Length: 259
Ligand code: XBP
Ligand code: MG
Image 1 (tube, rainbow, N blue to C red):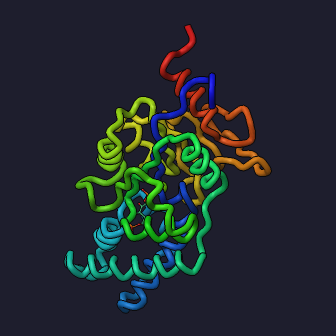
Image 2 (cartoon, rainbow, N blue to C red):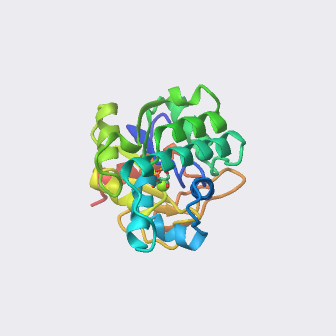
Image 3 (cartoon, rainbow, N blue to C red):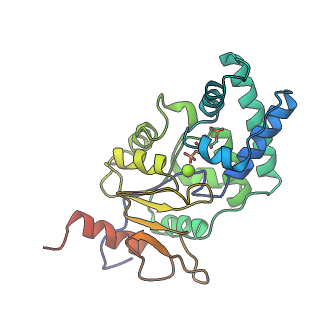
């Protein structure tokens, strides 16, 4: 990327819905854990779409129980154990190869690595889920490519609070203004923007009915040379892919808007 505007200081990736379409596997894992515990309920896709407004699996279970007064009261330890079993089932699904990276994710990660642009993760999901997804899709060494991995319960407030992005920025030792967050959900976009991060959204299967005000760009995916991305709102990449050169140009324009 010689000569043009400098690349981003770092790319900070959300996980669920951004790296991969993982929420169907999460939903199946929740339902498997509920069935094993004999709880008698299951989350179908329309209900799960609504429940995804609450980030964090344990918080989502508690929200569901509170919203359905006819459900048994489960104490925190029971919810924790139920969620731990769900995480085990989810990791089984990841290891079985059920989940692939979304278009352009491996390409953009490779571009960043080749250009020396630091990578980070900022996610609401539990840490084991991140490690297993990266290993299952990019290989056992992939976790080491990320200079910071901020995941799950390491912060007191989950998305849309900015905490997990602020933690990733602290671990990177970078200010937000020339980093880029990549997200799939309104909650994630709000968290990233609240942390001061320019943000690109790639809409996912469970967020295709959401609005993304404030995003640099809203795309159907990150694009591959043979699978061009499409801008749904905001800036459109000049080529078939969202690449480092495009992000560099957008950051330059945001930092130094034309007179
Ligand atoms: C998405 C979430 C997570 C997952 C489930 O995280 O909100 O709660 O739905 O994972 P993100 P857990 O988009 O920030 O990656 O059950 O481990 O929370
Ligand atoms: Mg997400």
